[in-house]
Amino acid sequence: MSEPKATSYEMERANFHIFPEYCKGCGLCKEKCPTDVIVWSEKLGVYGTPAVKPKDEDSCIACMICEMVCPDCAISIEKKAKKKAV
Ligand code: SF4
Ligand code: SF4
Image (cartoon, rainbow, N blue to C red; front, side, top):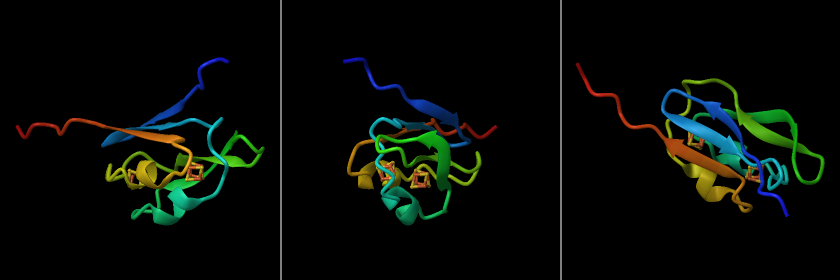
C-alpha cells in the first residue's frame, strides 16, 4: 500500500496538513474549531465526501483541537515557532 499523501496549507501560526484518504467528512473538526477556520474542501475524502481545508491563513490559532478531535487522524497541525520580538 502506498503512503497516504497529505495536502498542506501554510498558515500564519501553523502548517495544516490534511490526509484526504483518511477524512470521512464527519465535520467534527469544523464544529470544534474555536475560530471557524475549517471549511469543506474541493478535495474528496475516503467516502467521496468533501475533505476539509482552512479558509484563510491567519485565523488559525494553532490550538490543535481539530487534530485531537478527528476520529481518523486525518489532520496534522504543525505549529510554527513563535517569531521573536525585535
Ligand atoms: S488548530 Fe485550532 S484554530 Fe487551527 S484549524 Fe485546528 S481547531 Fe481551528
Ligand atoms: S474530523 Fe477528521 S474525518 Fe471528520 S471532517 Fe474533520 S478531518 Fe475529516
